Image (tube, rainbow, N blue to C red; front, side, top):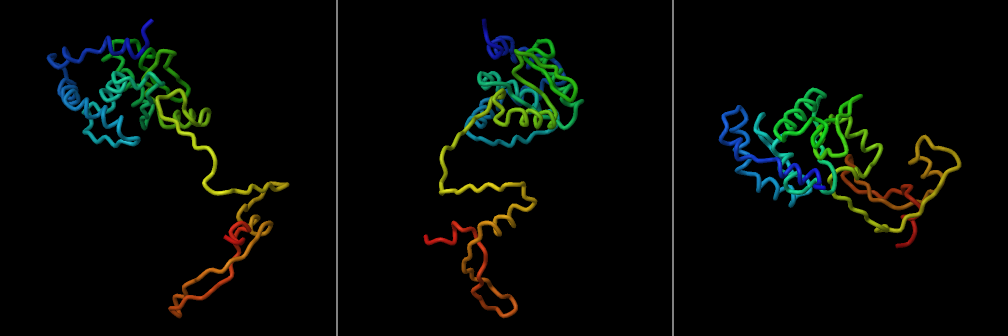
Amino acid sequence: MSSPAERWEANTDFSPKIQASSPRTEAEFTYLQIEEGIVQAVHDYQVLLVIGETGSGKTTQGMQYLVEAGYTTRGEIACTQPSRVAAMSLAKRVAEEFGCHLGEEDGYAIRFEDCTGPETVIKYMTDGMLLRDILIDENLYQYSSQHFSISGRTFPVEIYYTKHPEIDYFEAALITDPGFGKQNVHNLKLGLESLVITPISQAKSGPP
């Protein structure tokens, strides 16, 4: 059985759309000219800023190009929108272009309504829904994203625990585990530097 990404690619043919007379022909033709550049830029940079006029196709065509490039083999592509109406209308538009039923390969997720399924590869959603997903899974494993794990610590760290919750952890650390050090402080009135004894962590107060 073919994957959703393979079915998407097999059913997506942009050539007839260029020749057809439709309101979105010009936008689609513009994106066809720069498709390779967009996909390569997404591959090369972890963060990419795409600037385009309203109706240029950056939100509709751009998502489809990422599917064709194979980015959904590792998970879904999320596209956030500022409102529920925008998320729903864009998902409907892309479903029509692809030729699928809304909620299959393309869908949306808004508050109290999740129009997606197991085959969904592009999900239009509000910012709040993405934040909810982060609370459930902080690594967002269901989406097509890179994950990096860094083991160990660059510097030795000592961890101390308190018997009861502290309102001000900074003040508690100075009281329960203080150290002192000398610090040069510039006096603006005198225009001179003076040596001041200040509390620091016990680890920093020890010998280097």
